[in-house]
Length: 239
Length: 239
Image (tube, rainbow over all chains, first blue to last red; front, top):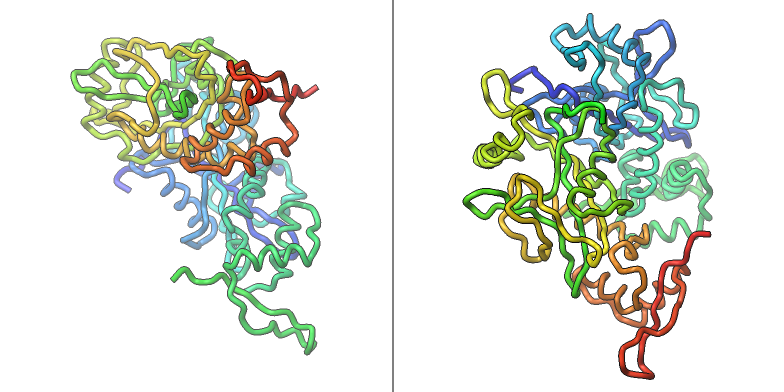
């Protein structure tokens, strides 16, 4: 990074998805405010930084891991996406923490709009410990079905991110990014059922996944029971 | 519009697709330069304007029509997306025409990056006469297979716009937006073959389209020949 200056009216926000215990989870920050208000991990884009690199930087800050599946899913640019109240709340913590960041206000000291680019990331829940930054009182995984009170239009971003994940889960074979390196077919099915929030008939579903011809069968999973233990699979390497 | 001021480092560009004579076409401006350099229709986003409204404004300026199918397909934000040469060329015409628009340069007079949001629009070729603006020597339809020399990363934008159109043509039933109000099944097939740049077997394809159960059959098309005239169809109204 050659400069610490950022683009004034552009940010990015990340919906970082993880799958655990049949729940789709995402990482949220609880902001350092008196009220309980939560935010997606995000940040400004430096002048000399590609947007995708900015997204990778934010992800690495919050998850400690690199080489994560990451994809843009839309731009959020309504003029009213940041309410006056939210602007004041956020400024109250940002001003002290980042004195070199000029607030996006015009010459009359009125707030100016910030446009945000939404990215979603798919991570292995087991490998990520959410990391808080200066703005945060805490940072943790939350169930997408029980979202707390979110700042700005972050709730809308989560909804759109989920919609795009559903569209692409199948077509782009994203499921393995949300599972550990080895998994059973039942794990895949439970992931699909969680993401789409509906049941899939087991026989059809497992046949469909096997017919994709992308999985390599390994040993049986150790479950204690002998005969009924399911096989473990992993994604075929692309050699 | 309450203000004429715009967001300094953010623009949008539109890939406006039309279908004519078995060709997929898009609208390009030939810029007022000594060299032949072409650009996608685009523009800045006003401070008090939703991004989608800015896209609609640009589209209306260039096509004279409203209520057009319009969708974002990605953000283009590489730091090097605008070469020094292109920046100088573009500034040379923009400076005189838009003296109130400050060029995106920093305090050392170095160019700053502009991020652009890509939209694609689907229009009825027969209804649109491309309109030039002050920057343009001319504005017209061009065959996507014979693109001229494009400024900035506009060629990359066209490629990405086409990729997203292919992904969504089927799933979102977009084909009728590229055809006149009434059309034959052969028209639909030719559109698909053009967009995907590959043949579709006629019987299977036409069955697939009819099975979608979204088309209403009208009278036969007048072709001069009596028995073999094809039926005309239109999209069922959503009543």
